[in-house]
Length: 318
Length: 293
Image (cartoon, rainbow over all chains, first blue to last red; front, side):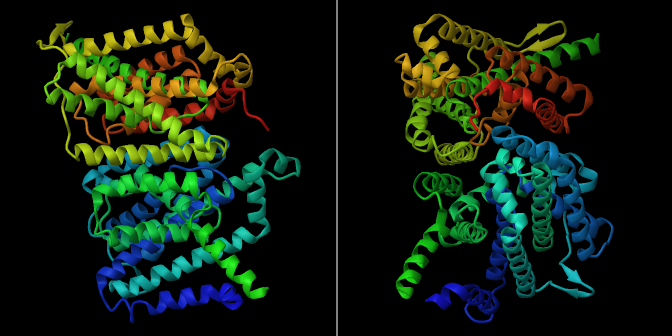
């Protein structure tokens, strides 16, 4: 049991690697669903760094998701840039926007912060709709090519599945490293008491901007992956509702734990597959899930998992 | 003369949306004043009020009855939300409360989707009548209703908070919760009451403007956000400030759409919000004056 508690992530990685050839068969549909799940895991984990660790509420995370997706889409469709370079450009632009907006936005607190991030999201979306000549406007941007790296094209869903989940693993691993580093502990200090952190000589504003930039870059990567997966981009996919969806994943999984939000993303994205896509019920369900989590299970799914784990581990040790 | 009549027309549409924004801002301010909480579900009361009225009218109820019943439904809903969902997590921090009101808005919007479907509903104007020509521009009779009801509501709110014991008690809670409770005022009752007021006014905004809009389950987001913009410009806890800012916002928006760009009017409104938040964050905080460290 102790070993399981320590090396569960190896089993998980093996499962992700072996899933398509064994259980998943070669069904492109399933691979497609799991690619979506992976993209949302990246989004949820990146928001967790900002919200869970640093305590900075954001109702506009989809803004950076949008920047990544549209920079990738526009550069590959209109300028013939290679997807990898386009992705890097998206990361650069997201980082620049986050860096420029970070200091004034994150100086705000609570409701003002929530509203400012929401406004940022809406500005990006209305710009996408308005700049029709560039983005295709409300009718969307078509024919985004498959992802490719130096000539090797990931047009096969299974191949793309591996690429996406490899990036997911990288993002999750680096988020864990960041969270456990002194940088991460500083973020937690800012979360628990900004005034106290300041008296210890921590430049809170600078740290908040840095984590904002990092989480924007991750979200931008998710956006690029999304663009090449869909092949078609429409502004609806990046609205405030998407941002709120990510927020639900965070709370469902267990905010401030990295693994939790990842779990929340998997759960929330797979749920419609199980419930036979009752699309009309999805919004009500998300709301109810969020209410239940807030009132009864504030630590989320991951809290339940660790609770069970701790019981077994202590029993094994005792 | 053609240009002038256009300007008048823009003014009318600005005053119309301004009324809605003012009402939304006031509904947010009332909840905020008493319970120091900004409800992200305010737009849903806007929708629920309007769509309830659509349903009641289609069932054959006379307009005034349907009107009163819809406000009542929204008020009860608002009170229930406060009692059942907000109060249990009241002391777990502002972050959780923000997320809770987002959850409530998802749940209400999701319910509205199930009840009224995805399609748009249109409400008949409150009174039949031809558009009125004023200075070369046309004025829908419904616009007069909207403005009349807005003025009436603002008057009632003013009378309530200034002249009735209950209103003064609620204002006392806003000033100092502990002090108010020592004076024998139930702060919990005041909170419920403020939610009922807020939801009712939000619903009123939706119902009066419904004949001019295609109302559907998701129509509440923009009015809520613009209400918040007006609220922040107006100084957060000030009803008068919210009203003035609401009308200003409506007029600025109408002239932006008419004279500059209809594509980017929302971009401009959100940019204004961000700029206001950037310029006056400390000023805005000063008005809350209750951040315990």
